[in-house]
Structure formats: C-alpha cells, structure tokens
Length: 222
Image (cartoon, rainbow, N blue to C red; front, side):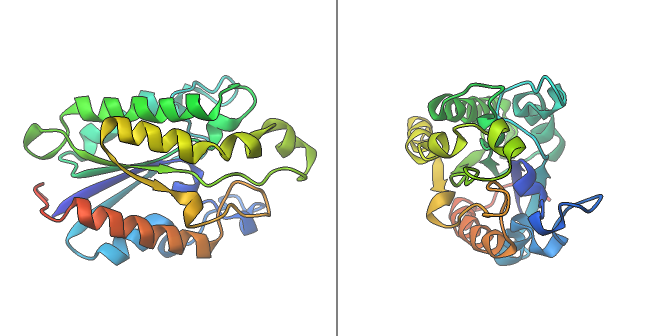
C-alpha cells in the first residue's frame, strides 16, 4: 500500500467558486482533484488530502495567522502520516498576494524549501527519504475582476505566468518530478484563482498518472 500526501491550499481543499456564498463553499468530496486521483489510482494507494485555504509556501500571513505558513506545518503533517511514499506539493497562488511582495522565483524557492524539509524529514518508507512531485499552479486570471481581488492580487497574472520556468528549475535542482498545471487546466474566470469541477477532474487524472509511476514499487506499510 502506497501513501500519497497532497499538501496544498484551497484548490486542494476543494473550494467551489459557484458556492462562494455558502457557509462552507466546498466541492462534493468525490469531485475534488485529490479524490479523482485516488479513484484513478485505485485500491493500492492511500491518498491523504492536506489542503488548507490561504496556505502559503513559507510566508506568515500577518492578517489571518501563522498557521497558514506551509513550512510551519509540513513536518508535523508528514510525521502524522508516515511512512509516506510520495508528497505532492501544489502551492504558490496565495504567495502572490501583494502583502508578500514575492516574485515568481521567490515563490518557487519557497516551494523548494518545502521539498528540502520533506527530504530531510526521513518520513519515507523504513525511515528513508520520500519521493516528491512538485506542481506549479496555473496562472491566475484576476485582471479586470472586482477591485478587492484585483488589489489583493496586484500583478498576480503577470507574475504567475513565470511559475512554470521558476518551479521547473526548482524541481530540476532537486531531481524531483514536476508538473506544470497550466499545461492541463486554467483558473476559473469567475474569481481568477480557483478551479472548475472539470479542471479538478483533469488535473486529478494527470497527477494520478505521474504518482503511479513514482509508486510503481510501493514500499510503505498500511
């Protein structure tokens, strides 16, 4: 049995743009990309969704709290689910908020810091390192939307267009698997950052195909 931990933000949590007014604006569980991935992989894999709205790679959110800093929580997450065969990291969109003043390269370096932390954690099978898949988020589409969103994510569209180049370099430096989500899906035009159910299905199936290759010889215990 192979254990796959998916560490991400609101898109991994399953935020639904069409239910934004609901108390819990979340896609049905079976429609979230992590569930699609689990269904595609089949019974030989345990997929653990670890998505949190607002999560960043390494930045403390001065408004909503330090708990949104991915670096602060990743180690505990891995320890609680070990042994972990594969860690999927899909973060970076929240780092585009103007309060962090981060470039695409700096955001990618934040993802790299998470990869380094995971590699050092020894939370893989038999206390060894785990395998990782780094996924670059698709470019945002916030230009022209209502003022609060466009202000909060000022220049996000421009910066996120450089995600692929920056994230792929970080993955190559660490010899980990990589996927540019922008090659598979687009962010929703409704709010410019979240994904449609169709996008969840497409990216879930694509990530499943990559994870299947990484877990061809699963080694972790149930």
